[in-house]
Length: 130
Image 1 (cartoon, rainbow, N blue to C red):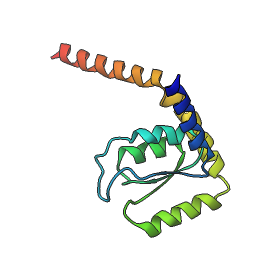
Image 2: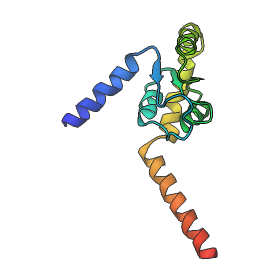
Image 3: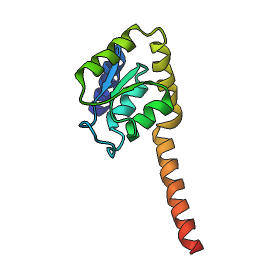
Image 4: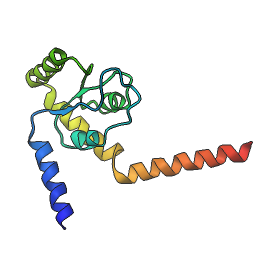
């Protein structure tokens, strides 16, 4: 029960923000895996400003979800411009809703387990063909 309450509290906190900020890596980092907080940010239904390399896994998820915008990490002026852009963008609420729908459809525990199982099956099938 305490864990559930914390989870709800975290989700409520995420949903209370106007914009969710994701800064997962240092400038130049492209091999970082998708930050676990990205799932929470996208599911919150708020636009996401991701300061991450354009070729990173986090950037791929932001583009796939349509949940926000990506700026290069390590540049405070660009980060501030991105934040101002989202704050004044009439479609930013729609970004958040797209992200929330994407999280429900693609980032759920069930979908993650299905993808893991399917990937394992593909590996096994590939080994049997050799």
